[in-house]
Length: 240
Image (cartoon, rainbow, N blue to C red; front, top):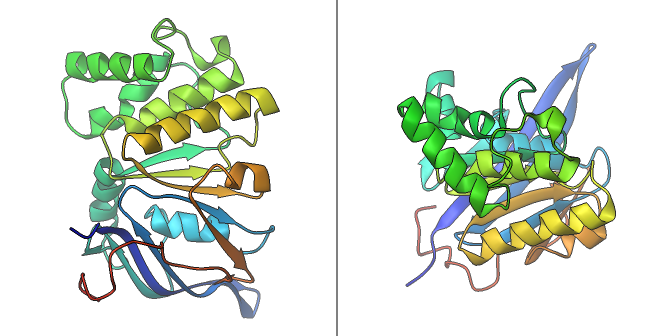
């Protein structure tokens, strides 16, 4: 049976007003990611990779083009619907962790479950279970100030997994870490991929990109390397 496309983006354009003109951050990007893939988006500063990740994560909308997430067109959804998609289908991991400093590790991980409507006891039990899975079972009651950078990133990864999303998006997840800790975090991503997770990771580091199964290079807002996975579903297998 063919795998499904988790991401199916066609001719994405993103323009921003600047003065009397516009800046085109994306200039017609096509990208497909199959279920269970681990893809690295690479490119120099200004190549459009972070803009693309924002659209894939439903944090931004394209100026033109189409984006199907799990077969659902999301580019024209209103903010309420987009928030629901972000909460239930996508897990985010950021370079700066984006943890709330006054909350314990388990409380940070439980936040997406609060928005999903789970009771507090269920949220915390689920959060502690995931923290144990990422190697922080003994740090559940620590705040970010009491954790190392690598531990904070593990908390952030646990939070991304809280709602069991279809897609994990990571933006320079090792950018604030030393090389040893970064390697440990990349090992965790590989482990998650081995469990069948679909991961798209933005990086400017070739060594980090080598961790992924497929590398997609961007330059000047365009994809300049293969856009579709080898062995993925045929274009005729799913709606165009």
